[in-house]
Image (cartoon, rainbow, N blue to C red; front, side):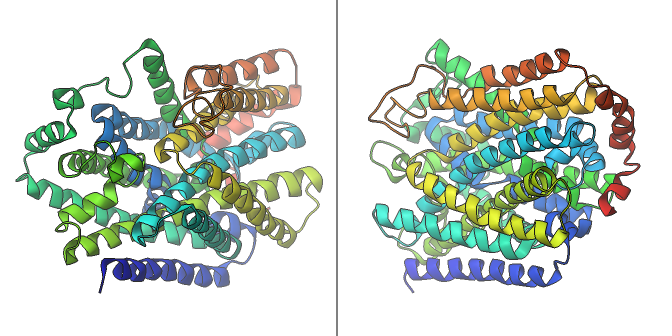
Length: 534
């Protein structure tokens, strides 16, 4: 069997398993609580696996190891950022949110504010974050499949993006949260075992001596000792250093505002389970990012990363799969082919699972927040609401497919960092203010969300990430006036500032009198169950 045939077979097996899970789940899904929150029936450990599944996206698997392979120490900063971010999510948001909401991020704001403006704002930012994040995943899928099936050319990348889009719409429309969660769990197990296998094989090549691995990486990278020191990617000028701080801020604060991570906390029965699941997730994710270090430096040591190499051409996105082939015995060998196919199939499962989670999040926000509560003012049956969620999944999937075709040359980790910047600028300020500031009110919430969202998007569009840079989305034209690639350092404070101004320029006694109840509920969980079943 040739390596390509093998890859295709493994690939189809992974897809078949996920489709099977979805069909099984669609038979179990009865009402809205099943569709949005998996009937709150998952244990802490299962949900911990699923959170890890949601979080260890194509960006971390393909993007980070690629960045480390290309820029050494500075690439590793992404791993640290993604990991530290968890502590913020755990300490500030996870449990409080689990106790005080029902299905979407907006529920928790709408609890003490005027429903319609707040839900409209929260749903808009949820959809924008999800679409940025979807772009990253689908671009990764395009790169992978062309490598795997050994096909060249734009046509195939575009075709892959469309196929991934359609598959993801299928999972969401039929499987709901139950199906999506099981796909996540299967994928987390596959991803952890695949990464562990390659880590062990790479370390075996260097007789389990880490400094030998790092030395080989520095030599083979052609950059020498500089490869292991800060400053290769960020640090040439003041602008790149500020850009780095900006990126770090977005990564660390963004996780706590990512809607598809937030709604994961709703799928467990109690607050104690929410804590257990985060503890499991931190353990799994932490060990995963440590292994991403070995993958990145391993790729730098064992692969060609210079001018014209496949790793460099793909923006680093192909470092992990090619490394798998190298440690399996090299190109053209049976072992190499099997490992390459396995890792690529795992990465593909990763992408499918994450895009399904994202699409479910935005679709449920459109249906639950906009349709049920804003347009119909709550006069709507569960059946209608879930029907609208399914239609929304089609529309959002369609938008993501079209935009991904434009963004297909970008590094994945970079695209994800943009999603994090939007989450940190638009969602985090209103979540934190709402949980911790009794004076906070509707105008504050809407201003914080729109202010952070618009500032962030405008700065991204005006940055070298979109125009005027050879790696930009539109390399030919140049309308950029904002020097940083990541807007976080300006847009995150802007979100907090707008929220504060909006709040102090208006009074809303109802929001203030409801605060003690929200506080008690978020800290204890009292009353959350009633809210679930009414």
